Length: 50
Image 1 (tube, rainbow, N blue to C red):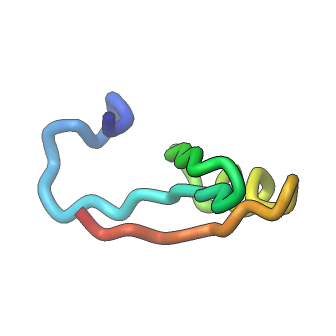
Image 2 (image 1 turned 90 degrees about the horizontal axis):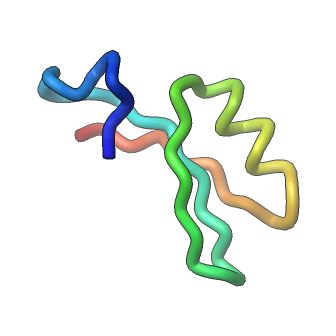
């Protein structure tokens, strides 16, 4: 699910965090939010081009 601001665009960069221990993946609107979330509980920050 893309954010509302970029849902119609192609080649969008998404910022996401994976928590390998739980398999949870969350997407964030900004890189700063994703990096901050990744600092908790062993999250892995990823920049994904879609």
